[in-house]
Image (cartoon, rainbow, N blue to C red):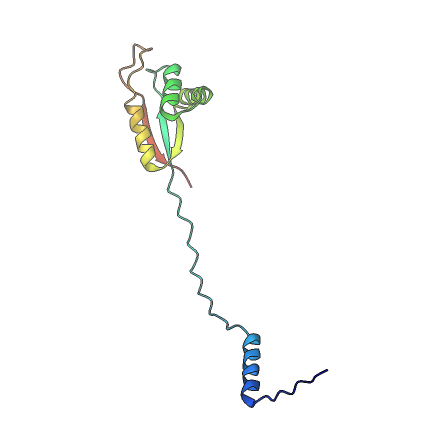
Length: 133
């Protein structure tokens, strides 16, 4: 076997130490960006009841049809509202935002007279009230 006799100068030795030191160097810690404060969830808009008031000039069928057409209530819900209006004098048709409640109240006022009743001269009465709580 032939032996290799290689003489190293100090420069090669320093270079190999630098190279090995570079390979083992620890990563530099980066500053973590500060976390932005979490946003608060948006506030819920206040809710309003659309209240339908009783009168003797409109039939149950009128109320049921109006609830289906204006509020998309099924017939059973329309019947429940018609019974509540008749027994209690008023009933909540829906609970929603102020803007939509005003729209629904105005639609009730514009719905027109009950063609099934001779006493009916116009639409039923409706109001809006803030939801308690």
